[in-house]
Length: 194
Ligand code: VGL
Ligand code: ZN
Image (cartoon, rainbow, N blue to C red; front, side, top):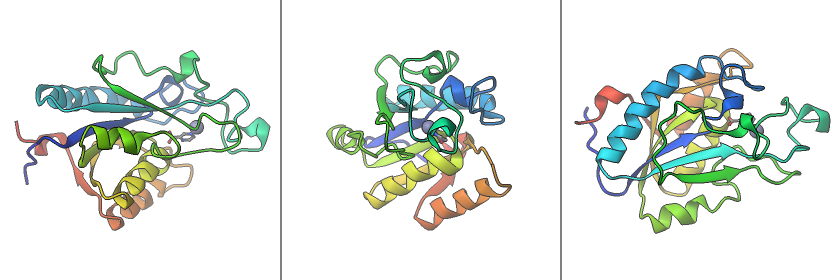
């Protein structure tokens, strides 16, 4: 079933930062394959004059999620570092709304809504439906999607533009099931009406 973009829609790209891409400190396997797909979505939303939002993981150097501090992850996405920059091939428009998350040392936040003001930004842009892609499916994508659904947004997950870490085999499928159980729908680029 074709999806027609309309006013009130926004594209939300989660954490397409160097540290989550091949060669980065917390590589999401296969994530570079998302870049050309996300660029097609970006072009489509721009042609429709609809907003693009990009979240970024933006940690202090001693963030609680890092192994040295007893957390699960190698250091990654340290605010201002090259690893925290968006990948150069991702064609983010100049007026992209950038949302920095997990910026405080003592709290981790997988959701783009967590302490960021994202909800207020969406309200001022009069957004009602968000199309979500990026990484990682079972962490930041999943938590951002379920928060958005709880807040009353319609959410469409771009199944050809997300990638999981899969620390446990099956994490990706579980995350998709969970997002669907919360009310998300899935789509792929071909489903978007021209
Ligand atoms: C993420 C692990 C640690 C994510 C962020 O963006 O999904 N995953 N920090
Ligand atoms: Zn992180």
